[in-house]
Length: 252
Image 1 (cartoon, rainbow, N blue to C red):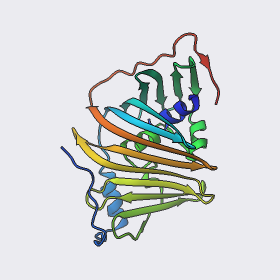
Image 2 (tube, rainbow, N blue to C red):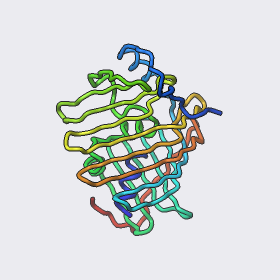
Image 3 (cartoon, one colour):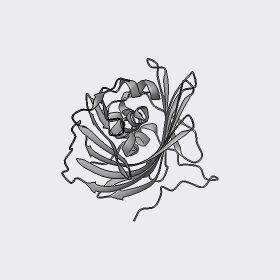
Image 4 (cartoon, helix red, strand yellow):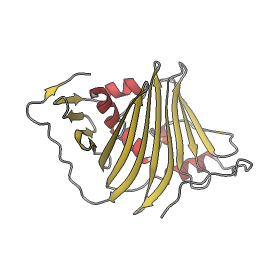
């Protein structure tokens, strides 16, 4: 339970679903620079976001389900609360720190992103978690050398990080230019895959109502499905977080 809670809240922490072209159609040829520009322009401008999520988490066949609440202050912090009939845990992500406590075992964790990064085979930080939740590229397009791959149904961008020995693949809807899939993979078969669908626009913010995450690292498989509902945009909200007295610190 403790391990699940930490893993989960770190990695997160009138419109119709995005349309795709018919399988017999071929996407219009455009330059890589233009594709990058259109995809970058899809990023929503906001200061605060609040949304709820019905979420399932499966690790090596063991399944857990939770109701989650997210509060995001852009590029600053993410507050996550989890419940199942009753409150279960609460976590706060900042630029430099990861904090959470869970009520069942009256325990808390205080640390950084190293543990989740090793588990999911990607170097996570606050910005990458925020991008993951919002359906943006996890890493900055401008920092990678991108090439365009041939595809009949979608646009596909790819790059390779020689230092980290990781391949990045981004699948982009040809009609809306929304990011519908991103994958990070290594030569040894490990990968981190995210699919986005059922986008809805609320007060200028395009938000994926369904997020599916799959990760494989050293034969350990994690799968997460999030059904989201955006409830507030740019309302100045509070971020109440305090570890209760008497809770025991744990190390992971």
